[in-house]
Length: 458
Image (cartoon, rainbow, N blue to C red; front, side):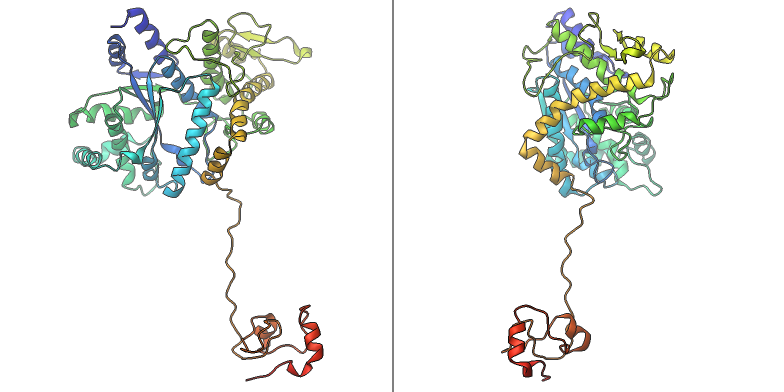
């Protein structure tokens, strides 16, 4: 049995900064028993919504939360759901899925290491390893026999791509995600608030199959740089993990950031969901609050700096600093996100100052990830296989040349014994060699010595 103080500390770490928690009492019960909770986060979009879709910094939102799970001693399984992704309107062929799953694993592991989070309790699972088994498919059929078309469609409305003529595969998607909870052997599932309908679907239908009801934790959705959803298919709405500093600066420069607007501001949302939680994590670590793992926060070549996103001369407890040009005033330091949001709403913080501050923080986050990529030949090879250059022209096969139909002597083919037909342009045109002497350098001396062999019809 764990002490009440320890249970409360870990539960607070697991549930903080979430938008909604369903079934939190079951997690508390597990912690009270002294057991290690097990969770899973399913990454179904490893194939992206476009041929070149890559993981972007929007993934810092769930990964920062998963870092809290790992710090609290939770065993986390990350599902690379290749079968789900194929069913979701067949976004990519299976031959790309394996490479992209490997690429995601490289990225996610490196992100956790760069944040100083131990990954000994992090497990990667590929969906096809168990979703093609006899038992899983029998349970899927049992589920199909008890779920109406209306309920299945409603559950996947926010996640499955909606098209004019929907495919049957889209109706299977919510049921498969529900079954994953049972076959991965977890206590709770974590995802975005856009998956709430699938989560409630699982809570209703898994008990009907005789399986336990799981808890569900949801984090908020973060808008992209253009104000809408951050998407892999829109290069202007997101920043890739491997973008160099000059590309990051360019994208931040053109990001939507209207003065005083706090409702449709992707930069402010990123500060709230990613930068400040990471600063809080680093401040806790500096105070020695490593919770479940003493090896947390050890500085290495990959982790680099573990300082909060604040100036060196900032007051103690500062989680974010707005840097200004000295001629426009001094820097502003904030201990909570709400203080920053209030100042921006009152136009005390200019959009250009916010952009410069966020830009510097993002570049510092991405620098160790990009360095790890450049140092790994295997990762670079996987990246090329997973995301081939869409502008590269396919190698074209040489077209077969139609012969003229006449048997002639050909000095270009160097075959005077077998009298092979010529495939050069002058025979395609006229069926015989032109009167002009061929310009092939090796035939010139021969033709000059034996002009009577210019052409013979058989």
